[in-house]
Image 1 (tube, rainbow, N blue to C red):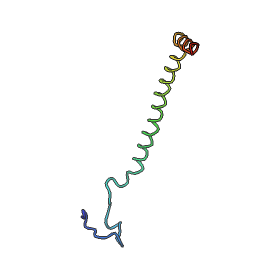
Image 2: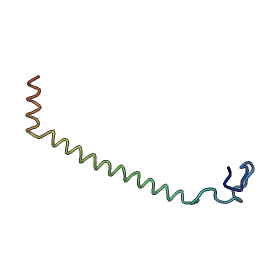
Image 3: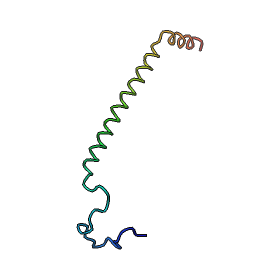
Amino acid sequence: MSTTVIETWAGADLSAIGPIYPMVGSEFVLWIIGLAFWIGFHILQARIEKKEFEADEAAARDPERLKRVFADEARE
């Protein structure tokens, strides 16, 4: 099944054919956008994980929880 007029790529002059995929020339802009999203994702993920870690740490320092843990340890 062929969707273009090209029957074989052997010996084809790509400059005469023209663009073979959409948005030719926008690769660098798309790369910059992708890089920005990638870095933004990691910054956002680090903030979320920091909040979760601080909440877990605060819960672990709760005096009531510490008493329960030590009481459970003493029973064993």
